Image (cartoon, rainbow, N blue to C red; front, side, top):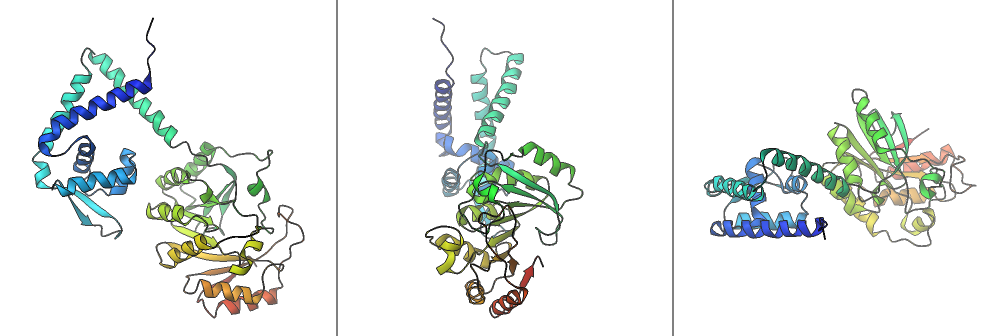
Length: 376
């Protein structure tokens, strides 16, 4: 019977054999398979950060931290303050490491020669080509994230302050605000057409000389854990990125900001705490996540704004004053008067009068220096 190749088994055997080989050869240097790749990557990229190491090698944060801690404890790497980001460190090899690194490369070469026994030059070339393709396919699978875009505004002068931008709309939202004018993006009817990612990136590539930024809106973009992949590609094109969010996923927002993938954040503050659940169309809602988002942005890690869509059925002057008190010290707060449309989730919503809007602005200015009425 012909044996059918089993990638899972073969991959396991290769991994274990490689691990045992490196652990044995590296034992006298007091390191093992878990550290050699980090050491070589640092040597080839002096001054790299842990985040960059994790990204280059597709390591999780814990694995990277453990590897660097080991290398630092035995004196093979040193960490320095990052003058551009106090939250991260720059990693360098030490003279002690440089004494052994040439041997590391010899050990690596010896293992490759062991693996290539019985394979001629042409076979080795084909192997490397196929291996590159396999790794590429595996990386694509890792990055195959469930983010769907259902709308694109190709040019806006309003959505990103001071920038000519395009706006992309993700589907799905964890709120059901009755006055939301993007009903289809919340409920995603079967007839709603998805915009293919490659069409989006093709457009952005062609407009690099015209557009400056990209706005990611929704729906609620941070529902999608894999948004990072898209943002990274957009940033690689040279665009600045603005995120519109309801503030309910602070950890995801913070991670994207600290990765340098978001340049501006706009958070919708729906109402005061007592009216929040009703305003977002839910029976009850805890504000812990939104409070965390607000507090982080108030620390001024990134450009930001807060905004409230004012609806007669949900807001009065006292509410706006209370919201302003909650975000006291914020850079900017915008009041947007509700506008009715066929796409609104619930019929019968109304805007407030212009005089009421002005009173709301005056009330907010008791606590905030920069309050504007937007869209009038």
